[in-house]
Length: 242
Image (cartoon, rainbow, N blue to C red; front, side):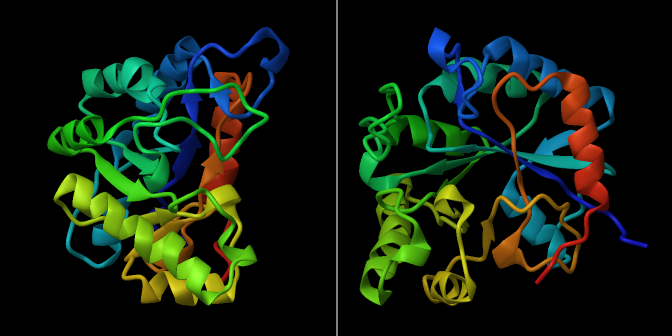
């Protein structure tokens, strides 16, 4: 028996994509996001944070019978405009992963993408005050596996210190940019005082899943609710590796 399994979903921009990017995985329209959340609620899920999963693994928190962590990478402004009202209506909380050097600026790490505003520090603090979690998505959105020790420390520890200074609260979890990681990155992550990290490995998370390598499924593009349900079902029976 696998025991209880907690899925984590990864969204980015909750907005209408440009006509030439209708299948871009970084975009989910507000209407489709609302349908996704409605489906999850119909299936009996309740929205929690990644930090909640870590507390549950450690025996410090009891979760709903069916819990799902909805995460947003990059901290785009459209999250507050279009996603938060949907989650708030149901009393769900989420985790937003911010690129610390880009807070209040734009998505400069991806020159090929349409420009978009990143949430500023006051907006992130408002999310924290509302019970949501802010995690780190590195300092400049660099692949940790491509960095030397000093560069990795700047991206990992530096981003945590940046965000904690902005928020006045502890930043506990990390999202690997592009999902890329290796054994060295996991050691460096631990040295940077994070309690957990999310990847893009499509498995559900049990009590014994490595908290530094939590599974997470990317959700983007024209993904219909039945497709999300199918992917979610597969995720919940896929065992974690490593």
